[in-house]
Amino acid sequence: MEKAEILKGLADATVAGDVEKATNLAKEAIRAGIDAYEAIMNGCAAGMNVVSEKYEKGDMYVPEILCSAEAMYSALEILRPHLKASKVEVPKKVVLGVVRGDIHDIGKNLVKLMLDAAGFKVIDLGRDVPNEQFVEVALKENAEIVGLSALMTTSMVNMPLIIKDLKTKSPKTVAMVGGGPISPELAKNYGADGYAKDAAEAVKVAKSLVGGGA
Amino acid sequence: MRERMTPMERMGAVLMGQKPDRVPVNPFILGFAAKVCNLPIGDLYADAKKSFRAQVLCAEMYGYDATPMYGYASYGAWEFGGKIGMPYEAGQSAPYVIKHPVETPEDVDKLEVPDPKNAGSIPISMGVGKLCYENRMPVIFQCGEILTTSAMVAEPARILSWMIRKPEVVHKLHKKIAEYFVAVADYFTSTFGADKCMAFTGGPVESNKLINPNQFATFVYPYMKEVHSKVLGMGVNVVLEHPCSDQNKNLPYYKMLREELGWRGKYIWVFGPETPLEKQIEIFGNHDIIMGNVDPPSFQFKDFEEIVALCKDNIERGIKNPSGYILGVGCELPPLAPPINVYAMMKAAREYGSYQ
Image (cartoon, rainbow over all chains, first blue to last red; front, top):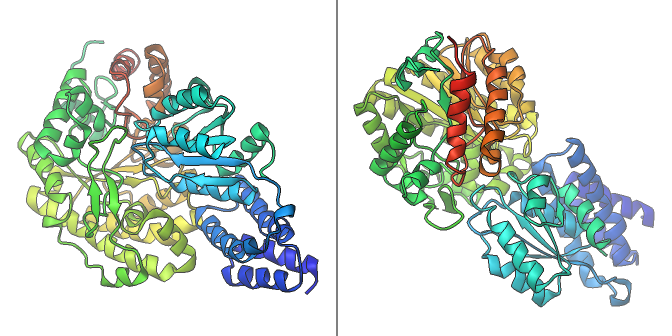
């Protein structure tokens, strides 16, 4: 197979959520001597860009995106061990989690997926995360972004507390918020540097705040 | 305005297609009632007596027209053998799933339809229902929605992924859940009488933020129709239907549901704030009641005057519904909303919602 065909195939397999095809093409890319970084960025990530665009337009929904994620991660598992250190730019780090009291993590997981695909290094703290953990991990990892998600009006009130703590202890780290009850106006009131209405927008906002992922 | 009707009379008038003295108000209050009564929110879901009392006192204090109910979005996990936690910790506002009873397709095969008499939260729900019955209030039982419940039984991402990868497993699970909902309806109607009961259904996983309308048509509609048909067939005449969040693309199916059921019974539609009242009136207005859908988070963050203005706008648009309108919130009122903002709803209903 030609290089272009393999990369396009990887992108298409990611969009289609075809795990078997994505896995085989990732192996094929290694066999054909394609640089792993290029296969990831011009194959898997290119596919996720299409997914992101389709999601934004309402042409793809969460069930399909979850399958795309499965295909992408199956290819990444094969490609990542072949990354050459010199080729890899230092990725921007995002500490991401659902705030305390809240266990709704579909939105957060979609944001993680899109940021992963865009080349960010995501440190996923999961759900129902204690307030102090966001700042502790951000400091430890020297993260560029802390991303906070909430679906409940009772849990979202933790966001301004975390942001205040973050701005005191790590003023350079930017805070992004999102989730069902959050609005741009509220994000501003909370002191957040960025707000995204969905996962696709989260990548754009993250890039606008700290530059590209990788 | 001077009120001429009691809350029960007001709601009764709307249900019978008559004009009350003013638009009724149902602020969709659950956890908020616990807060105003100085109870932990967990008590509202864990203790039938406290739940009933808090909801009654809260309604009396403000003078709104809703009666107590019991239900929550994570419904299903406990009933089918999983484990839930009650919202006793900071930040929590409703029961949440600790363990989903289904993790594999084989678990679906093994899953038994629970006996409602002792399934999960049903004894608590029945406890609230008995208190409602004794106090001549409608008994509200939860019987949906199908995908939201299966997402709690099997974990949301898993069930959404199975819709693509293993659709036959989702159908198998949905058949069992539909069977369970019908059994719940039978339990409540045989205990209290169908004419004393009101069905409550709805949920957020059906939202078009998660699934497309074709998926709704394939995985939700057939089971929803089956359950609704059987519940109406038992003699339940009122259904409180809450398509949570943005379900605009599912509207044709909700319309189809009512058409295929011959517009039987009286539905009270509680859409999220994403669905314009005008669109709801166009589709359901000749038969059903529309409950207003003021944006829920606004109640927590906007001030009194802003809430009055939002409610005034909702009243002016909703009151045009020929089959009745209730001023309401597009989902549960935030439990941490400033208490004055519920009064703002009442003030708006009294000042701008008069039928006299």
